[in-house]
Figure (tube, rainbow, N blue to C red):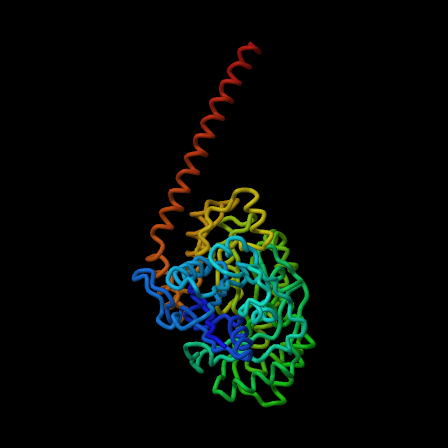
Length: 464
């Protein structure tokens, strides 16, 4: 019937690319399209580059494809457009479809680089978009009502093999009702949780274990969203005697259920990635996180009790944050013996309340989407300069990953050196921005001083 490729563009800087974890959305789409009779190839650029800007060359296999689908997150969007434009220039007859969270919220922008844009979840519309059955350039996707109806993702479609010694992705739910101000999940996947049944997830795991995989990363935005359903799933894993290691993302309230924690420990969970976000109570309120600092402390205490690894995820740079907040974050991590941590810079992603507020108040410093990756400051902070925030976040990694964590110390230093090497121009930009802001502040102070001084002199004369 034809050949279809799905491309996951590379990110300017992303430590997670070292883990070799692909987006799972394109794999679901590729599996559905394959079942419809198409030949499918899925390419992730962190494994093999699709387009060389230096040589203006596309991967040879592009020539054989009839339709190209590109799934882009905000930090990979600039690269997605670059690839799409290069393909159109070389092969104008090929159909290009762009989807994903960024395209969903920036449709007009994406349309400048694609023949069609899919808004929202694409599983139920992707085949018709490929065949052009609806004739529309903007296609509204629909939320999949029953996730059990989706086929198990076919990882053999990837143009590289995920090593069985590494973690491979799996997802068992979509959606989130919490609607944190900096997160686009609710806008993209809905304000209610949708779950795969425990038996459905176990069957996929059994299939993957038979293929040799023994490590899994649950991509759920909140793995413990339904405690009863999560407990039943873990019980089924024990009943089936499935042997694997796993990690997952979740919220602090997972620690409020001891039975669930026992099952998590018993099923060989290596670490939980917890969205702590901040140690500043006011920042938690601004984020609409619906958790308190004491909840974070109690979560850490309970996970320690069950010997479950803790990866703390922090978002730094909210309007309530100042340099001391970042220092307090490191002190908190060390005092509470968090195993590993990430210190992300607040990112105003399109589709979020944060983006809308900063855009409205002219606080976005750039629309270079490649910088929206959590390692670059792309907005004007409130209680510190952009340069201060940038330097302090980099300093967080240095202060946390010391020789006491030798394995991660070496890895973090390699990443920090790479970041510094690739961002000389960006740091010069922030320094220039900071110098100009400071000059404006000095000029304002001088002007105020002159104005106030003149007023006082006049008043003194009248009083005399």
